[in-house]
Amino acid sequence: MKDYSIKELLAKGKDALQEEVIVRGWVRSFRSNQFIALNDGSGQNNIQIIINYNNFDTETLKQITTASSLYVEGMVTESKGAGQDIEVVANVIKVYGFANPEEVQETILQPKRHSLEKLREQAHLRFRTNTFAAVMRVRNALSFAIHQYFNKNGFCYINTPIITGSDAEGAGEMFTVTNLNLENIPKDTDGKTDFSQDFFGKKTNLTVSGQLEAETAAMGLGKVYTFGPTFRAENSNTTRHLAEFWMVEPEVAFYDLDDDMNLAEDFLKYCIQYAVDHCKEDLDFLNKRFEDEQKQKPKEEKSDQNLLEKLDFVLKNKFIRLSYTEAIEILKNSKPNQKKKFKYLIDEWGADLQSEHERYLVEKHFKSPVVLYDYPAKIKAFYMRLNDDHKTVRAMDVLFPGIGEIIGGSQREERIEVLKQKMQDMNIDEKELWWYLDTRKFGTVPHSGFGLGLERLVLFVTGMGNIRDVIPFPRTPKNAEF
Image 1 (cartoon, rainbow, N blue to C red):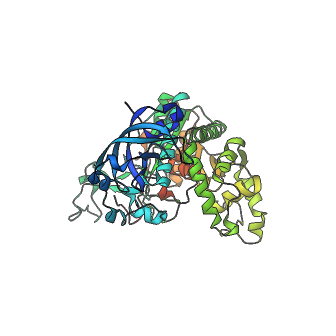
Image 2 (image 1 turned 90 degrees about the vertical axis):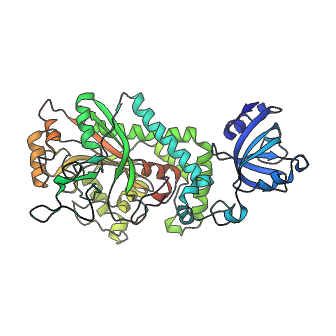
């Protein structure tokens, strides 16, 4: 007797007819004391279990309720119902865990559609819902594709520190790590917190990026990438921000910005194609959900494409590349800007582009994914390579429909004197980053890299509208439940 996952058994279909099998799972519904819809999380679809209630004792039947967990032995037979090829006629049923129907009524496990807000209140149970299970399986596929892509292309996987003494972005919005007694914080002679008495002997934080450390690794290993948790102490409650999220950051020696843009495009297309190839059932389900959601929106907010069309849009189109300067001219002369429809009007060169501007370029003007490059130095980080015009840096952002920026990257500043001057201009302490500067002393080379927020990619591929719904347990301002 073979033990199958439900996905495996359904995939085998009629080839499994008359086979004695074992399946396990949670009850999605139990109708007429005869039909059980069973799901084990392996896929979107349930297997129907048929029972003859005369063959089972009353106590066992009472235990079969929505959300209870079962062990089933039975024979695969051809289904008489619509929408399924096979079902299992049960010979043996064991109840692993009973779910009290009255308590189920108080949870999101009751068989009806719930709001995403309600699901977040019971995040520990979200995995049992069709929507969240689909999202998590897509997230898993994308995570695997990321590792597979870099492995196939000769990259070395590097684990960079979660606890750091540096601020890679220079943003200052970081979580402090300490084991000082918060009821009796030691002070120095200036009355400030004396971090010399802390565990690491200095002020340390949760990292916002593994990039700087990855750069040092690329200077010896050539092609590296990080993939791990990062943190921002930004008090933002938008649908696009999390306090804890996962970043993918490749770093490559001898790459210039053109190489970096080529890598970003190839990488994104590979990951999306992998999800399309391996998550068909889940993407079909999420596409239907996306279309239903669009029907409820006002006309001006509706998407021109459904979810599957958006994915195909990215896969089939070569990414348009244009400079920041060209983009500013397009935006300045655009109808939304001239008619003051943009929330943030574009008046002059040097403006920091917002999501509405990025989406206009992708969805309205070019109707293609866009890579913007050569941004003003004043709005970008210190480590980006200064161009000969001394106004712009070799930075690039990849822009997607419906989401705006999905990747941010740059060619790094490899010239030590230029890097030191930029650090001085931005008040970044050379002593704190002496080790970073060392990489420019001992055989410096041109090198480039980028950062991809995993949740942004999952958001795009699943069509979900809120980043809190594409991570198992979201961490946001005033919320660290579960």
